[in-house]
Length: 197
Length: 293
Image (cartoon, rainbow over all chains, first blue to last red; front, side, top):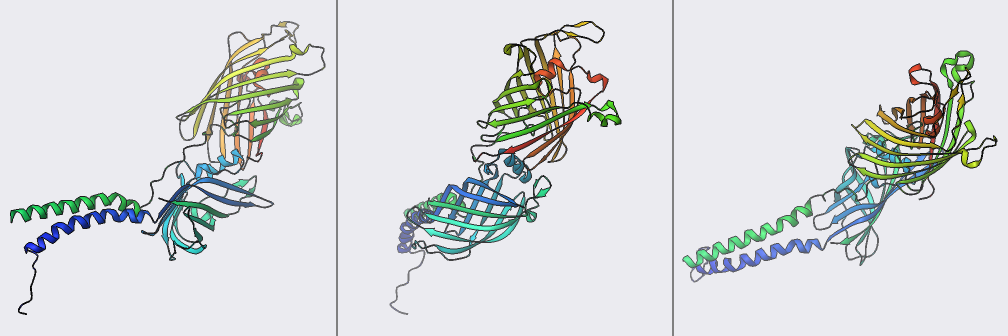
């Protein structure tokens, strides 16, 4: 190939290119997380509740300090709640519940997983999604697939989800009201508006 | 040539520094958030109800909670089968209703059968530190039998400091120094015709404990020891029992050397020394209600 100019890595031109481009690339690399931060959402004031059924009676436990974070760039979905913040409306029942859940030993109910559905962060329509990950409570972790809804807005993204938790799956002895046992199946509902980080 | 080497080294250093600066962001993005406990945590429950047996406990109702109690203290078990071990004897019964004003302050009102006593009570948690709680308890009682006494002479007061803490995961102890005053404490005649001198003022130290057998069952005991001058013919009080907790109820089943239901009267007027081992049995049922908090 006569006449073709070949540039080797040891040539002065290449060295010059590398010495200028590497710092620039480095700078861009350091900026990359900032770009992904724009696709991450966080809040620590979410609402979560469980519905317990007993024959002829039911009660709801709520917490408004659900902590959540979704990172679209990394595709992580991370939620947890301090179980000591659950309020059933009767302090004595709250104490019983904390004992049942052994919150001294296992203070959190938590989920960590990933979105299984592609989402469009530019759409403000509710989007049905599914997440798969590990849910832990009472020291037991199980893999879960949870359906939910994401709604993007100027404020961030609203996350709504609901699923049935079976107490036996997490080695939780259903508490009793006198001799009547609370239903093993608890309906869990969460609603949180995550704001851009 | 040396110039190019220096530039290459500079570039490599820049690249490494930039990579290092990205690491914290990168690890946060792929990892879980650090779990942090909520800022506000509930007070630990030393005893399962606001009363050990007769003694108040450091446990307080949470804001908005109502605690309805039905307390029965039967006669001595030694009365035998013919009296169904004390059930045929006149039982002292107290109905009580307590309310949590805040998470640390509660008010209560009760009415007992013996001497038709109405008692009002106030308990306030003063401190909650490292597994130990301090509370102040105050109660005023009014006896209401139609016996011609002036109202002021029917009054009695009881104040105590409650200090309780967890010795281990299962064992709780409590100490309660107290002062009790009966405005009018008439001397009594004993069966042999002698006069029993009564005291208006009483200093006592109550001690109590709870041992948790399971998440639903605890053993409890309390001892009311008078200090200093005591009324003739009266004695200290020993009570012990089992607490069973189940979904908003606490059932307390106990044996006690006193049938009195208020600490005032138990300290001042109990007449069966624990050493005689002549206990009566009783029970106290607590039922908690919420008021829409």
